[in-house]
Length: 248
Length: 318
Ligand SMILES: Nc1ncnc2c1ncn2[C@@H]1O[C@H](COP(=O)(O)OP(=O)(O)O)[C@@H](O)[C@H]1O
Ligand SMILES: [Mg+2]
Image (cartoon, rainbow over the protein chains, first blue to last red):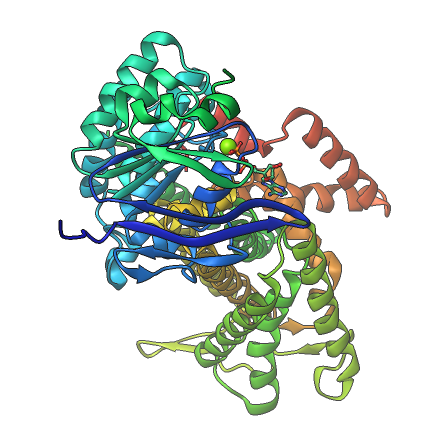
């Protein structure tokens, strides 16, 4: 079997906060087109790991390869331009702005090439991208609403629309279903399946139902390290996982 | 009417009203309004940084003064004409803003405020220290050095009230147009993103340092254009304009009119100007009244006058 180069690979990636090793020598590979879930107890280092991948955190050691090239030294905005988009675990939207404006900022990014386009990328083109992203998450009717007036579930969806508007190739979602109602979660899973037709998805998720419904492979983290990796069925059977994570 | 047209109509209407106002004003107010227009240009420049980008400076007098000395010194010593002097003032302000930004924008929040204050104090002290050249706080007068403006064969002297008023209005209009265009542009959207949530904006693909530097450059350009215009129109250059008070004024004007609104700085400058003018005719402790007005403002209109109007009645107001 010919080895396919992974879309993303981390090599012995570590992050220390003072004396605390939040992530220790994690080597992870993600293939193009897959939906990968990362699970693990609180404090396992999941958010810190993806924070290094999208450029929020500078690694203490190790490397990050994207499409085979080393992106460890790239700044967050440069990584976004390569197609790596991230949604925050703690909703991070522009609360004082309308939904439209929230999505327009990432939507115009790709249109700002060249000097004049930087000043005026053309509002119709921006508006079309905004509409597409808001429609994808089902918020098109609320475009004019201020973000802080939205229901919590809608704020999570707005966060996702902002990431979609960048046209991501690798979409990193940090506990996207946290705090959503049952019905919202079902709709969310359908949405992620649609998104995954275009993009690779890296999903940190606590809800095992969502993990089982979406992911073909699951990575389990604990205490900053990868504990196990495999199909959802393998992971459920894994003794270390049952002990450390599923609590059996 | 579409939102874009409504915005354009409002701002053109304000400019047209200001153009007509000169024919209705008695001489005393005529000069006052000319001063207000130039100072409002300064406040608009300040607001680009505070209102659009979320960076509070306490050192903007350095840009106003850079424009003032950059234009005034060449006129005084070299007899340079008004348009070239204005260009030199503008270039001094932009150059200073970019050089300052490269150093100071590594900080943010309160540290940025302190750093801007320190830089401005250094420039202020320099205007006193190089007394031989700048004539310190005594300053110098330009009127007998400045050649009248020749335009299509006609000569316009800066002492003529009509010339003063219309040049002041032109400077104000240029500042207003720049601020409005910036506010409505893709660039303005990025600046507002930085103001609201800088980390998020960086993760959405924008190098926030570069955008803040651009905002500072534009802010410095408008402030120095106002400083250069003030020197040429009112014929005086002195170190008072580089003092901390002149850094605080644009903050007050902007707070009063509405932080982050395009027309707020004009409203704030005009109201504060006439408040000080009226009160100082009655008592010498006019700063007390200014203070009281500000406390009332913070209590009842924390978003400033136009900010309140926008959030209550006119959400489309830029
Ligand atoms: N910015 C930070 N500064 C210091 N410690 C941090 C920081 N972010 C996370 N940590 C610590 O690193 C560990 C891993 O956290 P995190 O990556 O958020 O875990 P998870 O997302 O798996 O719950 C925790 O012990 C957490 O307290
Ligand atoms: Mg987390």
